[in-house]
Image 1 (tube, rainbow over the protein chains, first blue to last red):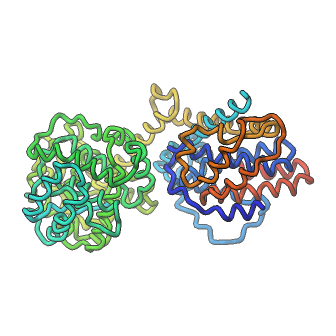
Image 2: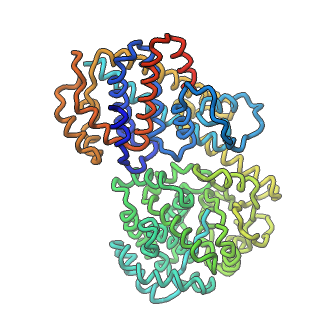
Image 3: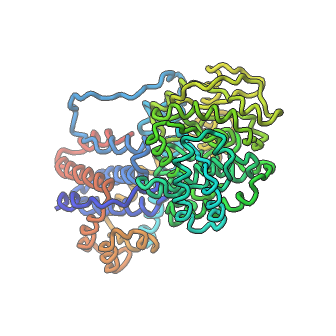
Length: 153
Length: 466
């Protein structure tokens, strides 16, 4: 049942404004939550659900940020990677230009934190980090609001 | 990187037509269209003088020029027009320059739909380039009134290292329109294949001012820079009275969505020092640099050496890069709370890293909380979302209807999920759909793995982690 409805949905909201459409993120996230909930009755352990919700949060964040952001693409890729696949199809991975000079531990740490930060130049990294931080903050605020309103009632 | 040919509208007819329309500010799209079209075509073959001497208003912008690009092209035209006007009058008011610079700042060739939307939403609720045209036109009107306006003290922030956001905020106008304009002009250029197409002086001007434009000519317009160079030399009109602060230093801006090749190009750039034309400008402004002949423009970035600094290309590139980095750091500083007083890259970076880590931890924590809450409550999206959201999402009328049917926000009872919810899935976008697909798969996995115990989930989650 889910598959059918999912495949049907190809309507596009246009290119969402990156990070400036909090209602968009909210909508997506809530939908995702409802999905989780719907199928979540099977995943009875809260930790399962928590992970699913966290993934949903990141996916919504990345989806609303748009495909133009390197971090959103990398994040979606990471999320969609089926965890069961231990053996990836050996395909030619185009490992993008890998910046040298990983001596700066701060820079390395930042690269690890920001999704897709392994192969960006430093300038790009800072840019993406800024965008990522913005989006993350918005997502956190959104989730906080949801939790507050949920626990408030 | 766009070299725009800002067609100064060669014909006086065009000029005659434009000013009136320009001043009218209204419906700029329509009127100048035909006349400007002329302007587009003709100046191509004309030499620089023609367009330089053309009237300020003539620049404006042939909204229509490009049918194919549609509205975007229109805006680009306006942008180009603006550039032209800047070049021309030389004494353009700083505001206009600023605006143009703002345009250029945001001008990442072609690819700025996101920015376009961004600025559109920021500054124009409608977010329609057409509106931007009008706005642009209306803004132009005052400038048209003062063609020989001597620059006022630069109050526009676009000088020096300003982040795009700041500029955008200040300009507050249809940058979206400008962006699209630029993109369309590039397409135009490509179409013209560099024939007589010269980069508008204004662009370079702007880059000087805003320090943000890094532009490289498209391959198809390789001759553009050459012609531009020649025209630039001739165009004395362009006084760079602007930015007293900006010592002609151009910090090339590589837009965030610039492709990696361009990044590399900027790094490997051919730094092209300003030409004589710049030296013409202000004697005081003149920096002690050599005016090199224009190199064939192939993705190079215009950089100007600062006074008293090394002028070799490597150090220039370094400086450009450093400035870019510092720009980004400032951006980050604004984002991270409590970092305004922190100085120094290392400390700043540390703060940023801590902040990101804390945010991620918060996400994890909140998701756990939501998970427990989810089991108890039933969400009703209608109440969760603000009312305006419902109106905003026109594509999902059916969803709205269903939501309206919902009774109350939260019910503690374990009611079966409303049937309305699944139907709303139809409204998902691609991205959401992707997510949904994944989510569904993931959940299936969960269901399947439930029996396998915690370890599976752990392994699963480890993949999820960054």
